[in-house]
Each structure stands twice: as C-alpha cells, then as structure tokens.
Length: 111
Image 1: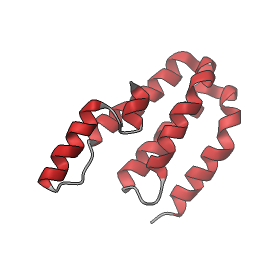
Image 2 (image 1 turned 60 degrees about the vertical axis):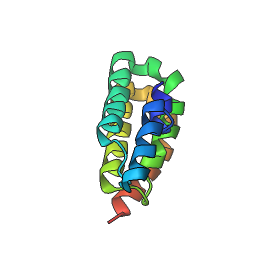
Image 3 (image 1 turned 180 degrees about the vertical axis):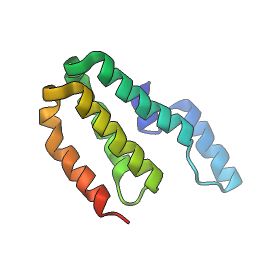
Image 4 (image 1 turned 135 degrees about the vertical axis):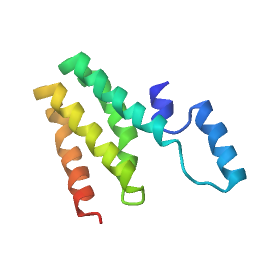
C-alpha cells in the first residue's frame, strides 16, 4: 500500500486527482505524501540495516519527487527522506548512496 501511495496510484489519490481535475486544482495531497515519506524514515529507523532488503523499491518510488519539475516542497521531502533512510540504515545503505548523492546534488543545483 505504501508503494501505491508513493507512485500516486492509491485509490484515495485517484479520487483526489479526479476531483482536482474537476476543480482545476493541480495540487496533490501534500499531507499524504509527507506522511508517506515520514513512514519510510520510521521504517528505516525501526529496522536499521535490515531495511536494506526493502528500501530499493521505496527509493525508486521517491526519486521522482526529487526532480526539478516537481515543486520545491516535493524535492525537499524526497531529499529529507533519503537522508533519514541513510542515517538509520548506517553502513547497510552504502549501495544506495551513490545514486542518492547524485539526486541530492541535482537538488542543490535547482533554484
């Protein structure tokens, strides 16, 4: 279910998207996405290095939020989420660090 939320394919998001189209309001549900990112940090904190087996799919889903085409709030949410995952996984996060550093550097170049 968390991956559905991160890919913005959960039933509640599809209904929200339809309502937003009717209202011509393009904002997605920031509260839901912020909480999903917080949940990833909590999972990483509670599982520590054991989160390594699960985190790849979640990281892949979060990368889209760090792209320059996304609002600054989305990019900040994604980079913060990546930082928490790396912090709580410790050395087990090493395989994920190079692509995440590239993502963070891209975000820092954004204006």
